[in-house]
Amino acid sequence: MTKLAVCFTLAAVAFAQQPPPRRMPPAPKKGVCPLPILPALPTLEEPGFYAETAVPHGAIEQPTYTNYAGNQKRMHVYLPPGYASGSARYPVLYLNHGGGDNDSKWTATDSRGGSAQFILDNLIAAGKAKPMIIVMPDTHDCASATPPMPGKDDACSQEYLKNIIPYIDSHYRTKADRADRALAGLSMGGFVVMHTGLPHLDTFSELYIYSSGHIGDAALKQFEDNFASLLKDPGTNDLFRVPLYMAAGETDIALKNGQKDLALFDQNGIRNFWVFSTGGHEWANWRRYLFQTAQIMFPDCPSN
Image (tube, rainbow, N blue to C red):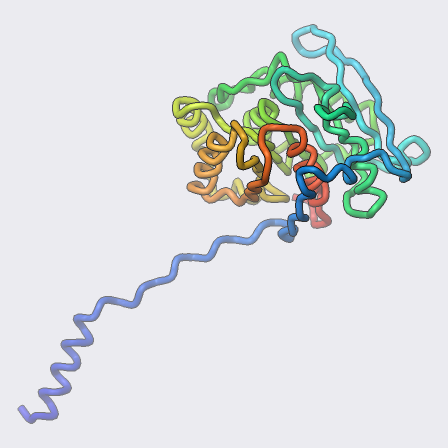
């Protein structure tokens, strides 16, 4: 064998022994709607965004209904400016309070209230949020930190599906479809978002969790097990018109719990926004989170 032939042979052997080229993993899919840009949070001490200012104001109503268990319940409903004089239909944000509070807290205007009506009045007047109806039910007797069993609706889910949503759709000019329903909640209300919203993405298309997360490893494991089929389903992301949103303050008592839930969502590839803010488990933060998220709700994109 000639020296040249030996060189070719050795080169061929060396080439054959090289590992095959590494294949790049598939890129994640983009969302069904264009990804919004999260607006900046106001500072923790900034009062202007939730102040009552010289802009058109919406109205607050306090309707009552009888729930599936036969109990009479009250809720607060914000109707955007122009609702009373027009005929337009509106998307609906269902906004949940925290533990120990009731349906009046999101519209309370003291330091321990949400001033939700003024936040939306100001955003709508500035063209930064869609005019929307906000429904604030009283869920103190149905919200639970215990994840429901697979395929089983807990008390709050039953009340939402059987009573709250049907009442709102029949008494107000809503856009009665999943693309125009968002669900948000703070602290204990965050469990309503996870336990009612996640298994019912056929009813809601946007979920916003403020300062909440499962308490203890046992509850987190129960949540992971009971929601495994949904979390692992590659089609779940296609049901979110806006990525799942979670936020907590750096001194928030719910911070570590929320981060564990976030890790579970990340592990399963659930698209999400995570917001880490100054402050703690307090209205100064929850007002800011509503201000931020109201600006990305109900995007203009084809229904799905």
